Image 1 (cartoon, rainbow, N blue to C red):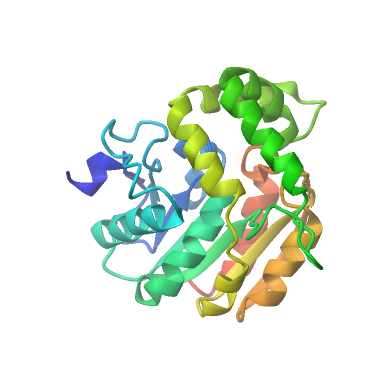
Image 2 (cartoon, one colour; image 1 turned 30 degrees about the vertical axis):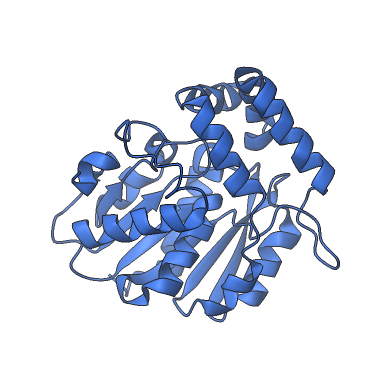
Length: 268
């Protein structure tokens, strides 16, 4: 199957502009970038897609074996970039897609000029000397709840993930995006996301990275953002004054400003 059809690839912006690829996080789809991508489409060739098993990706895109760990999603991203760009791209990854971006750049550094990592976490579970934000028991409970009642989980967890309880429409929007996914696939992707440990992979990445960390994030706490920055050989950390794990939804202007400032006017 052609890659663009497989992952519902869409482009916008000038064809001769530098290419910027946006990758959404767990449970989402490309609509998660609706407040960010169009801003960059004024001077970039913007590429949006849905991960296999998410959004409007082809029904046959998800393969239980290929996508049993992040390597399958990494392979998808590499194939997408090869299909849409002749020159190295800027890849913007949110949440688990930040890890997918790092793994892709480690394997194929020739494809990536820069990485923007929004709310990255290489390990969600606390470990000796490492604060990931959750105990192993809390992650097990989260996954068991998802197994028992996926729709109930989406309604309960979406407001927690997005934060900003004074703006309930944000939680409703995220829950609706979650509900568009196949529950069986979402449960498997959740295990890949929340049980993974990519801390050792950070040292493999030589591509320049921007780590964008929300001031308050219950999914990827501030300590995690600092950890990622400290263990990436070539990275900058920006803590934006946002609350929640989805600044692309809740505080897009702050995210855009951080990205614009880092990319720099002279670069383009």
